[in-house]
Image 1 (spheres, rainbow, N blue to C red):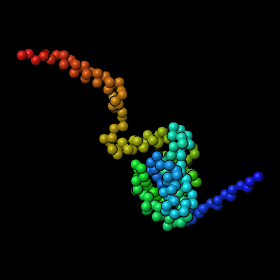
Image 2: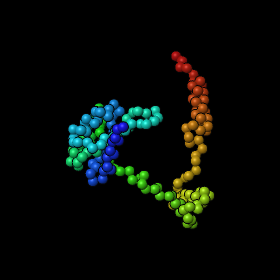
Image 3: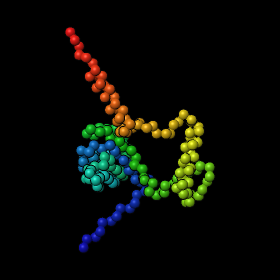
Image 4: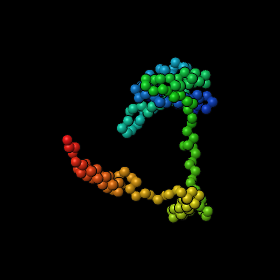
Length: 183
């Protein structure tokens, strides 16, 4: 039986000089971008991302991550690669940010329309009334603002189609009423 491979220790933000390389041409391979990145220093970690599902399954996502052993190598790679043309696209190289959105919970939306209620016990009717009150305040501030839908304003509406048909009928009637030029 073989021994399991040791798991690398989690790197601290101070020792992890991680770059995000984006706007990669779809024809660039993992091997080619890896070889380019290795010219600037010793890589600690390299992540080339692919689509896992959908119509683009197996294709590149258009970006990758590279971690260098030291800050000087990472800065050198960023300075040399950012803005350079790789096949048909200019590379974008930035410091990679940790995703803090996973750790933080989204703040809950509160609607305040004069009468304050607890966050957990707002009924749908209360929300509708609050939105209507807000719209009324906006309309009072700007009376020229018209929130009513104009009938037939859509290109696909029945009113628009009928108007176009009438215009075509008038044009055809004018063409038929014209008399040919006589010599």
